[in-house]
Image (cartoon, rainbow, N blue to C red; front, side, top):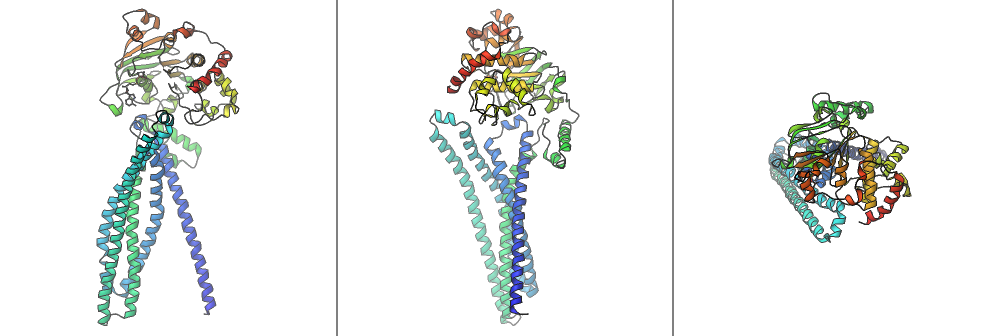
Length: 591
Ligand SMILES: Nc1ncnc2c1ncn2[C@@H]1O[C@H](COP(=O)(O)OP(=O)(O)OP(=O)(O)O)[C@@H](O)[C@H]1O
């Protein structure tokens, strides 16, 4: 064969090799990204399914870290390390075979380093697994501080606490660094031990091989080849040891991701578990069916799933006992009994911390009571499908409503994503926010910023009311804002609230006199139970009533001067008050 043919042949082989290497690294990278993406989606899906009580015990930073950094470590272990492990394994087995073929006795000498190496790698791997969990937890702590800063930058700035926040962050980062340093030191020690032992094995081969050559049992050429293959085998066995350690780091990180994936909520969710969703990924319709089926499966039996229009709105709290899972020894509700009639407004009144918001949370089934029951239309909330209950049958207006970081339109249509622009505008008009929205250059497409921070307090409140108006649930939980807006803005909000509550079953957490007056019934809450129930006039008219005591103790905002009398009835046209409210929006924002 002429040299040019050999060169051309080799060049061709190299080209094939280059192509295969490119294919391998490309395929690995893509597979890795897909695995990480799948893990993240599954973990996020699992987060969405968890009970609210589960979130009470978690830290945001830590959860975010599990979705980002932990998933990346797992991705690396599953791709880079698996590929390296396969390569090292194949080379190690191949070169060991050649060693045995060249000289079985010399091979036995060189391979005696393997058992101690394997034992060392096993122990080290176990250590790395636990250590990596701590590294990831440390990273989660740093994210927790950073997240707190971003969410509360105004508070930090207002209190001049930047240096303290920096110190907190440095401490958290320092903790993460310390964990990472320990991992690096351990890794360095392991690498050094690996190389030392492989070189010792080489030394033994050299010594025994020299003896064999001297005694004529082996040629010098064979010994040279043997040493070459020994080097190959040594490096590849050492490589396998490193891969094993890295793999264990991946296992450590994966435990944290799988802890999220495996967490089982106690309540049904509108989101199906990952396994069901994946099985039906081929067909969207089937996936939707699986999500409905998941509700059945997690409830054990078919759940009650009526349309909102079929819900009458009869609510009953019956002898409810409840303590937050994070403080299970401090019951908040003790024998809480209250019935809400359809179309009527009941104001829940009580001192701060008496459990008003807690009762409201139970009506949305954010938590399940430990004793007694909460029912809607005669059915325990535990029998309701999640999708039929929250957002559909029962709506929420929070004290400090959180808007999503999207446009005004997205926020108003949050409970009914398919709503037309006309419907969105109608809800906006009823909630007295149409005028200020029309005043924005981008109208309904105006972004509201994270949590709605680019709107004033009064505007946010009204967008949240429009959101509930559009969703039109038959039952509304209304946590009245205890902080004051200025008079005009508040009049606009109050009027919007009246439109939201009209004709609905309403449980309102009342802080104002006007709200109590407007309610059909006032329930006074004390030490976790209703101690007084009746119309405002009857209760406030008795000087010895609990309500009178609360009023006398000035635990309730007396806003009589502004709102007196007119609250029971009329719906003033939205136009006039909206103009007023626009003027007030500026002052809201400034505050
Ligand atoms: N997520 C939670 N985990 C543990 N305890 C909680 C939680 N939320 C509230 N609590 C506690 O439950 C008790 C009742 O709180 P709740 O918010 O229901 O009171 P409230 O009557 O609505 O008060 P306010 O009028 O001040 O809003 C308080 O002692 C509070 O500290």
